[in-house]
Length: 353
Image (cartoon, rainbow, N blue to C red):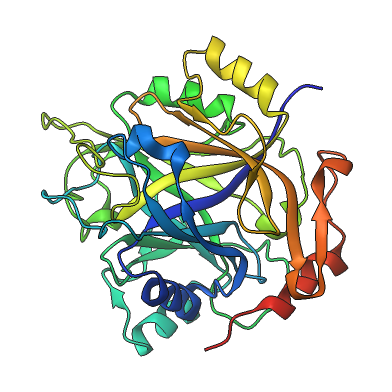
């Protein structure tokens, strides 16, 4: 069997207070369905935690309206903090998370009316999309982008995540790397001073922005729920030397800690990445249990600038855990979407405020 990368599974977010942050994401992004929510050690991550095995609370959450998931990670053995310096666009790593919405004007009004820290007007992106930017409780920047590929008509004003912007030092090298992960469609490639970034940190400089997506998505269990996703590569074209967002910091500190991909056949994927010079930096080597109901194989690699990429091969996930209803993913064809009734059953696990 050759490997399959279905696409972005989730965006990982480090926060200092788990309950508080997740409540905000439920309110503004509708991320109220937990696939898991557990506290455990993170022995896999010692290479990124200065050799110490930390503990953390992590919840993988999604919005039944549609979109990719989010992993909310809060260390419990140390307090997650911001970097000592103020980072800006073009710094190396994930700087902006994407969340999709069916109606940008309605979403904008919802965020404003509910007191969110909206940091831009509705602006036009290089693709011509209407969009706006907002900061969450921990000052992380999110871009609300338009979409029409929602899975349900759930009433929330947004769906889930849909990718992110990643600062890189060399766009061409980054394009080659992310093509290995299936993001091989260039939607735009522009170099300019961009009006939609005028209110963002460092946004008045000149950048090269390249938006990637998948030419031929491979399907997969949650493909109908996830929909289309994007990776925007950002290279600072000024004489400024970009900083690395997680330089001298710990995995789990405040920020976008990694970008996660849903894969099948981890072994052959690892061989491919190793041959390309991006071999796994850490690997569970086997099945990792995340509570009683979730079993996965996790690995990490890095893009050319050290941005963390998580690969997840799922073996078992809960659908309705309290009823003992689980899905054994190994027995399904890699490209086969889950049946609608099974995905929609997740609504019974929704956390309500």
